[in-house]
Image (cartoon, rainbow, N blue to C red; front, top):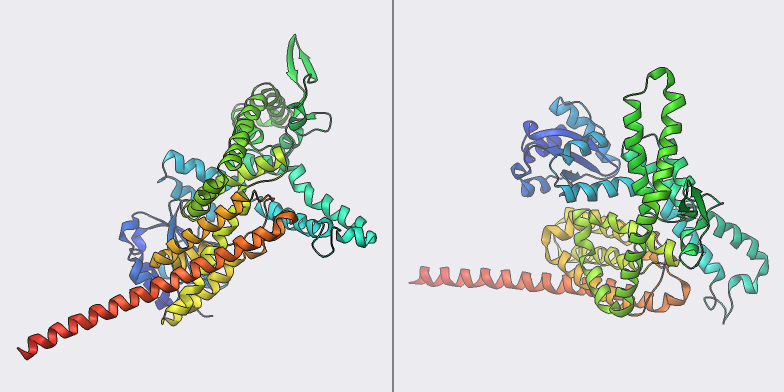
Length: 484
């Protein structure tokens, strides 16, 4: 698809002109702007431009949805039209972050850390889903699994399971790399630090919690527990921050000629001692408390917890806070081998896609029909932003309908104690659900599909009839006046 200068110029004018743009970059589908004043944006004018499929503001950035492939051309034309220099996504993020409050900055930091490792986590979740199909009893055969009936598949299943579990087993290494990079340190040191916390010679944190006597190092008369933090998230996050700060401090003070001999060794040494003596025990206690609280909440008030979490998940996506729950999912998986949260969250993906799909049937706008169809497919595959920001939020009632459907479906999921792992969302999300829960999960998915679709269409028809009645009433009044 070609991109005209006129369309791009219209976008620039609709967002307040060139002078309102601090920086601009692009991702796979969107132009990302850091604006001086978002109040100057004319959203109605912007979204009436043929090139634009939707827009939204998130984490201090104003984002204009263009579409995959086309956005690259639009970005090049925009730079030509405005005479601006291109910026990286990182530069736009840094510029936009200046407008955020401390809580928003914390949410953004967690997002910056976990988004880069999501491909590995999602891949691991999908492979675990494949293994669930191979080892799950009663899926294809009565009280038997595929490998029970066809033992020759057992080796294949074991290799798939090993590959799938690698990302979760060495999770601190992934988080260490991403977190230290985000905090301005050396990624390689972050990997080493993360792997250091799960060294094979250390007793796992989960095992240590069940032991009366824990092996200790004698550090000049002070006992330090020999505990590793396999699958834990909080210890490596805090240790990564400490490592980056220590490394930065040393780099600014150690002469270049001996930095290689001093900075990395001293940084790892100090971080290691701080991690095992202070950070590890403290964060393990906090992580255990959070895990126990979530387990108790879903164990005692599952229906209510699922209803609330399913209902508000879309709002969490709008604010960017949904990324913080990835850490909680990973913490639960590390502690108890499953999570209650991800299965509920998937209901929100499906519900938003269903509402967007319903809008395709009720609107007469050809552009909106196309946007609704493509964005609903995206949501059904786990990416809800195009459906939410391109369609549902624009008209409000589809967004609310999706929240209602997701809340009801989430309640069904949580009431039945559905367990799973983290992975892909949307309709393929059942692959991350333990097979014994598939029946009730498919029921919940049906609710998430049907309820938002019906509510959206019913309200759209009600709104249309109301507008028609209003026009008829107004026309009758005018006729009476003319007759008089």
